[in-house]
Length: 140
Image (cartoon, rainbow, N blue to C red; front, top):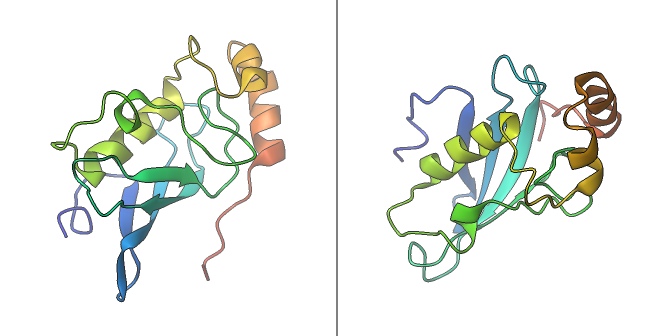
């Protein structure tokens, strides 16, 4: 509920259906002044039964060309979703971290080596990003 009423710009998440509170859909807008500015990505969030003691499974549904995102599966390499998980993290915290990761990848631990290799060349990176990106449809 906190997240749905959140004032954090550029992020949102809510249950996919009223009948299942373990499966959520979210959106993350690319941060201003980054290569992702103006783009919106849909993510899926699956909460395990023992959440918040175990991190939710989060993946990009919108193809995201990024050093820390698998372009095929949407898997995300982010420490707070793996070994640095803490029960104090909220969905809002995770989404803000993902939004931040878009503009500040961890190139030391790339999941997508192609994206990592061209990160320092904004023009080439943007070309690849837009080749994979699919805008969200209004009727999702």
